[in-house]
Image (tube, rainbow, N blue to C red; front, side):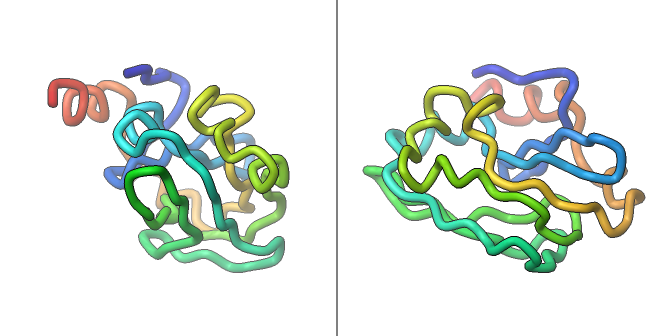
Length: 127
């Protein structure tokens, strides 16, 4: 399981990379390993407003269908269109080309509720 120190994490297995008032969001390496081969991803539309803790899309693997939850609130400003053609990019590079969405963060204080790499690894790295 790979966990990057430069990211923040949700307990629902999303990672978030903050870039000013924007955030790139994706699925963690741990989650993609647990799900297995990802075969379909449903993402929100650009312009959609997300609320922290609420579903923003889903992904289907060979094992199951899972909802993805917004780690922070904000407006979707970009989606990774490549995932529609090749959802397995999440399996290959979950922290790189497998990113899912970019949002404009509505409330930067919500970031304080997220986990750092150590807490995420301590919680899920020993299962």
